[in-house]
Image (tube, rainbow, N blue to C red):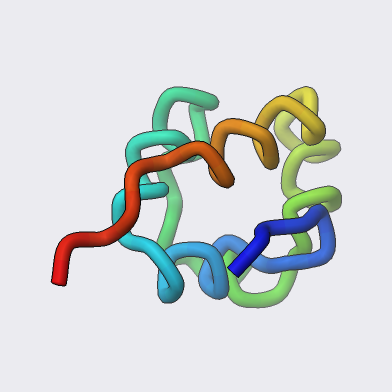
Length: 67
């Protein structure tokens, strides 16, 4: 899956749990709160003052989830 700004945190984590580290590096620690399923990455990035383009780039570069 190619991650875009329109995905939610929950969708990204479901696709690849390894992305949790990227979220935490950006100061996004509430990965299971209600906002994680409702807000897009773009909305969450704006709320946290994060460069969403860089977040998406790093999320897409995260190592694949181990089987």
